Amino acid sequence: MPSTPTPRPTRSPRSSLSGGVGCAPPLPLLSPGAAAAAAAVSHSHSLPSATISAQSAAPLGLPLPTSSLVTLATCNLNQWALDFEGNFQRILRSCQVAKSRGATYRLGPELEICGYGCEDHFLEMDTFRHGWETLAKLFASGATDDLMCDFGMPVLHGGVRYNCRVICKDRRVLLVRPKCALADNGNYREGRYFTAYRAPAKGSGMETILLPREPFFTEYHQRSAPFGLHHLQCSDSATLGCESCEELWTPQSTHISLSLRGVEILSNGSGSHHELRKLQTRMELMINATRKCGGVYLYANQRGCDGGRTYYDGCAMIVVNGRIVAQARQFDVREVEVVCATVDLEDVRSYRASNPAFGIQAARSASEEG
Image (cartoon, rainbow, N blue to C red; front, side, top):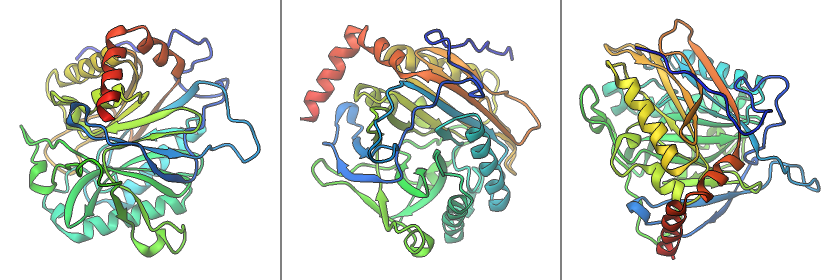
């Protein structure tokens, strides 16, 4: 399959695909704690979403950073089903590489903590318990120190199994975001193991999940975290939201609602296996999504066999306003591959502001939320 060139961002001469030495200082994305405040639930495109505000990452008494440059990281990981120790080491390595390149946000593949292909082991409570234990080990190892991390893991909430993204920073869980569209075609059977999330009715308040007491409360003094289809808004004005794998492929994709709500950084942790010409379809979906709505779109994927009969073909990438600015390899023997890009959020804001149709629909979406 022909490879796609990876053009550099055009706006700022300081942008860097490697995120290494010489980059402009990255824009801090989120503070150690999220405030318990949420905006009204959005019903645009029938995909409710609330905003979770956060305090500044800057120390008290210091001015907020004014740069609109932010360094973001995504990765290919060769994860294995139920190999919690090995998966932990690979995740930790990807976080360390992201930090070394100046990134302030790191995205990982779908269900990276336990491995995507656990199959009926998703029906066992041990899988969920070991997932939380591995997340606690990542906290203790410093993986989330000064780095916002988007991990993929299974979560049991209200007696229901969900395929979730868990967003963390500075040893705190900021948001648990469940998948709302499951893959049940071809080789996928997610409906056997998980339930697609449905948001509660408008006005019912923010849903929270109770975290395991050990060690999240005893060591990190956090008992619960927001749960649902929310996005994060930082005090330095950066906004971040996520969708998960199959949601990109659906007619009513989550990124449409998030973009109309003003979310600038969109992430997709995926577990997508190789098929002929499937990579081209993935790229077209992400390019068209950001070409229509503007935004920074990060995609992460597993790469390897995961213990099953399918091969996950990596190709993590970062797309900005319809252009690929960073892309990992599709086939490779390395277990961890991290790609970074330093992007200017002003490019996203200018791109959207220059599109009258986007402005009309975004304003309509805001008015429908009330």
